[in-house]
Length: 474
Image (cartoon, rainbow, N blue to C red; front, side, top):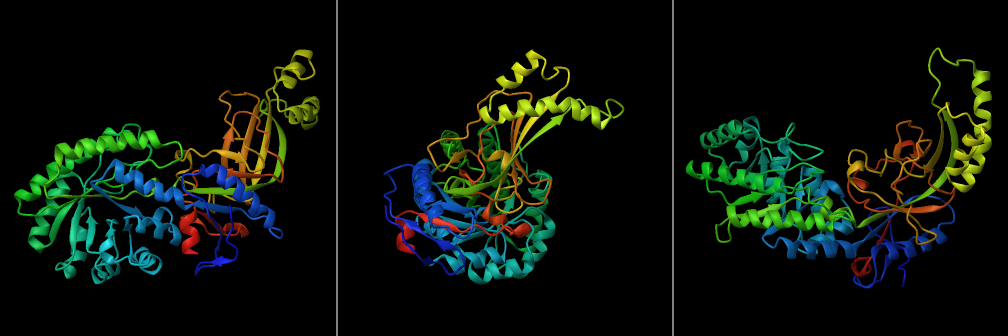
């Protein structure tokens, strides 16, 4: 396994590559070996870093083609705008979902061969400069969900091709979009009528089913609704040729089965509502599907702080500080044993022996601090949906969620910034994190680097790449 030293992209990020056949071994095993070597060479700084497995991106492209061959994927650039990663996707037939001029410029500047015609402008509320730039470079396919948005498009009516965004079915989704995006049935009719009056070209529909859904049948419901809108628009004289089924396709390490279920629902619904030969091009805007599992964050435990909390304390009861300290003192002795063995048994024995009084609810909390943050690259809004798992770099071991709760023990994982809200995760039992050890966090590709800002002096983690493609590109 060879490392490519001192290879640079046009940015300031460090790029290193492992030359490994995509099918030889698992991403996690390779990342552990790679991370060990990177840490060994990292002599001056203990900074977190990303490992991106470009073989995973190639595999996802293959999986998409096999699962939904009719659906052309337009990668949502906002999920992870990484130059090398997007190049791999483009070489494998993926196009781009952009929201504005900056994202379109990112594609043009970083993806050799990409053109405006390889993009769709999916933002329903665009600046006029975004519309103008899109039409100038050939990115003419754009989305609207209001009558007001049409007025901006009028000066570009000769080139602009409009997708009407409807409100997708999202009744089983944890994060919904319809409150902000998507037109109601009444508004859709108004949009179509106004487009006729303004001589604007409507060519199709667009929807999004939200995030964290429970049932893939919401794709079928949304495709059926799109079919009804197609019929109305065609009766009004519009030539409808594009169906955009949006994003939210599962892409995490442990989401293969869920993705297969979604793909089966989409394929069946397309056969019923938009069969082959109907003249409709079907596109989608997957972001997390491509980016989530390809990226692993390697972070260091910079501090472990054990605390004891007396949760029996309330206003007006046992307010004497000296009394409270006296009550908690025996617990600290037990805590020392607990922190060494990480077992609740010591506490139970102490209660049984009377060393610690059972009526006082004393909680042992292990606070673990990483050299990264929710306010830098660890995803904030989507964190509960990403199914993150933690592994030791030093040995083949996962920090498992053991599945049972210890009512008097907690482990809290914090980002090491000064922000008191920088809490990453919490477990209801003690986990044996060690100070100065390195850990791997999987499923870290979505809305991580896109949010990086270097808050509180924490740097931008460099990226190291795995794969044949990385070697060739570097």
